[in-house]
Every structure is written in C-alpha cells, then in structure tokens.
Length: 74
Image (cartoon, rainbow, N blue to C red; front, side, top):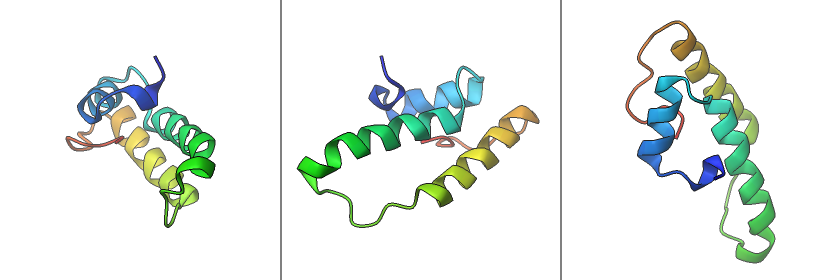
C-alpha cells in the first residue's frame, strides 16, 4: 500500500506514531498528483516547496516528542 492510499486519519496516526514521516506522506502524494494531473487537471495551485517546509516542521515536532496536532502530516 502506498502512503497516499491511507485515509487522512491513517496518515496522521502513522506520522504521530513515527511509523513514517510527514515528508514521506507528502512525497507519496506529490508523486500521485504528478502522475494523474495530466489527465485530471484538478489542481489550481500546487506549492510543493511550502508543503515540504511544513512537513519538515511536523517531523521535527514529532522527533522532539511534541504533539503536532490531530491532522499533522495530512
């Protein structure tokens, strides 16, 4: 199973538990978007660099034992 296939709660739970990182979830989702966007044309604006910074922040919080929030990593 790919990370992008998880439910939002599954993504958040896995990130908070340290099973995988927010960065890994993001890259899985970005890869999926890249593969399908040519057919779907569903994205208006995509900001991967901003998303990568946010994912890194969540991962640092998890590493420090802080609670990044219920939907962190989604």
